[in-house]
Image (tube, rainbow, N blue to C red; front, side, top):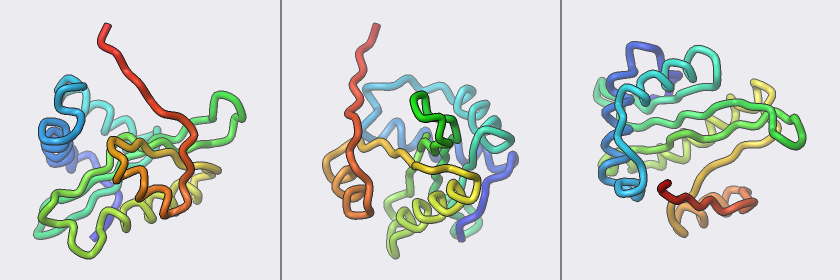
Length: 144
């Protein structure tokens, strides 16, 4: 079941996010700060966007969070993905895509004209392209 997250979901969301961070493509690129993740998740839930969760077996098994912001150039309301992850053992039946489609629908209903996702790999980029997304920029980062 996909639903909007509530504040009491934050500990499970943080644990899932940490699993993604520590096991995924960002493990050597970003610091692990659970307090920051919890604080930002609460801000997004309350006012800055939406956090959707995939709930299976009475536990959160997937998450997609996005913020809404006026684009720097156009001023159009834009939805920007913060996290999108589904535990591998719960990916049967395309729940990650269902999270994406639900996020798109909610963002549109909230006035967003565009949605942006990050692609940590070529496989993820190809998935976005299959569903109508177009590469606009490539992100680079450097430790300072």
